[in-house]
Image 1 (cartoon, one colour):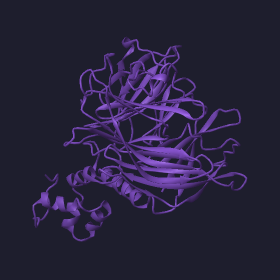
Image 2 (image 1 turned 120 degrees about the vertical axis):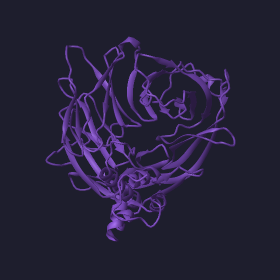
Image 3 (image 1 turned 180 degrees about the vertical axis):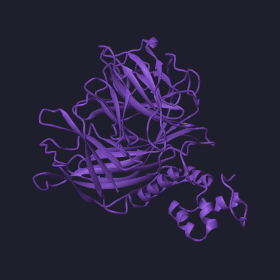
Image 4 (image 1 turned 90 degrees about the horizontal axis):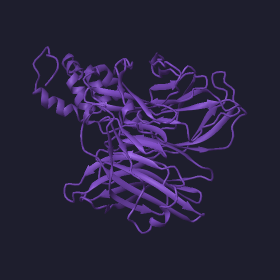
Amino acid sequence: MTSVPFSQPLPLPVELIFNILSYLNPREIVHLRVVSKQFREITEDSQLWRTVYASACFLRPPGPFPSQSTKFLERTLLHSEQLFRTWTSEPAKITGRVLPVPNPPQWDVLSGRWFVWMDADMNIRCHDLDTDAEQVLWQHEGDELFHFVASTTASPAGRLIYIILYDDAPTLRRLLEYRVEEDSGSLSDPVSHDISASERRLSIIGQASRYKVSFRHGNLLFDSRTRIFYTLPPIHSELDTVEPFLSQDPTSVWEAFLTKTHIITFRCWTSGLDDEMNLIQAYHISDSTGPFPVDGIVDDLCLTHETSMDQLPWPIVLISSSAVNTITGFTNVKFLVGFDSDDQTHYRCLELMLPEPRSGVVRPMAIHTQDLFTIDSESMPLPFAGGSDDGYVRGLVAIPAEDGEQDDIVYSIRKFSVDASQETCTAVLGEPSPVTFPRNLDGISDDMFRINCLTPRFDAMRGRLCYDIANGSGQVTDIAIFDLE
């Protein structure tokens, strides 16, 4: 139903008009405003933009939410649609700037907009990269040392930001919850949840985001949708090919991904140059919308599916969360992965097919791979990618090229997009585009200026790349923000 009355009778029922206009892209809807006063009223209607936003077949930020105004939805959709049209068809154009941040002990960028860091007094601060507004999110009191990990999620009412505080033990201490004011981008005052009663200790905790949790040798996973903490059980496997490796610790960083129905883990062991084993396991989780009250509850997980591969993919990006095949009953999860071979990196869609679980039985999962594109490079390419739950992915591969001027570093950028929303994945790879990253940016001259593959944060929704700049002593001095068009 329309949200505003129209000044003149409409020629067709408003629902039918909205259905017709929903097949247009945002630019075409805006162009209709010049046709007549009546079309202007129709194309400014809130319900129309909410319908178009929800049904858009390209990558866009979470929404629509009740707190998002019509202008916000229109502006966001126009920008997202422009990126969709030009991402792979036009050469990379980069606008860069620097945010001075003196040696933050920890930092993160959430949704490509909110730069969250801990200052020298251990206060947690937030800088809005769109408006340059700053907030103090949490003020430290006392002498106890704290660390944090931040995540974002979407609720029916809007986006939420969670900050988990933990001490040096490390033991969980507190969960801070902030609601995003969508139009302004500011964050609400925190709702503080005491979780110290859980007495759960972490190894080294990593960063979390909606439907994805990445930890470094950790065993505690936080589901920001439901506010539930999950504990991964000790590694075990019923696969004969994996058994010889179980007495060893995994030799490479492992990843865990939170889907709508499962937690999927990748663990790798290497022994010598040619002996490698990658174990993929799935743990079923309750399909609940939450959020639940935070009271220190920790759910132990039960292994339901597993398989193995003889090569570890990198990167591993979740591109389509759990989709149930109504004919087979299988749950399908898709990843964008890369496999190195000589001087090439082959990017593929890795699809895991999980049969219906059986109580007390660990069932094998099937693997299906589909070639998407190949990058030729004698030096290690740096891939960055991200996507949405409905299967739309945007990314780039940065390949070190010949040096530019004395104060420049040149990369060959190849942008790509992947559509995993259908049964078969499709990908578009743009042409190589040389891009110069100036070392001397806004007066900052640094011999160590480079893109470090461990620290960047790439937001696919905005096409924004952020990473830290260190001085000659290894101290972080600034955060570089690059917007790609």
